[in-house]
Image (cartoon, rainbow, N blue to C red; front, side):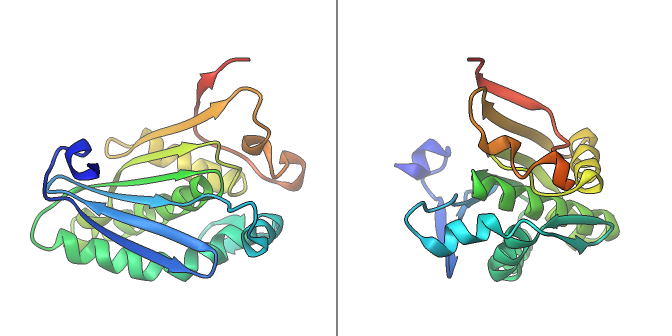
Length: 193
């Protein structure tokens, strides 16, 4: 059923799960979707990760410590799988996530975009350019420099970014801007009230 929804009867699915972090790689002949799971409310490790909101340095920006550490658990394996899949056929790479998963997808997409920029014109650079980032109710994942990296990615000709929010949802507004956090990309409202 998922394969037909993605437009291909040949979709392949691979899961990556370590501790409380889970992502699914969905592959068709035209697209690679990396979908990150959100917070699991009854899983204390998942909830605790959200509370590890200290900003830590990564590249030229700072990101949420809990989200960055969580992503690190699966990032290497996912990135290698993407590179392996891109070897024989170039596909559109899309990161997707809800809540905590949206923050993980955002950090992953910015990492891939930065690496693709660093390796511009190479096979690795072409393989890792994300062509899409879609999040739902994602919390803030980094500081104003991280937000600027998100805007650079959004303004590129390679990556479409959609950050969906509900007007009354508190999650997109945490961690607080007072603590140095910022969203950089535009909001797309699912509801206005």
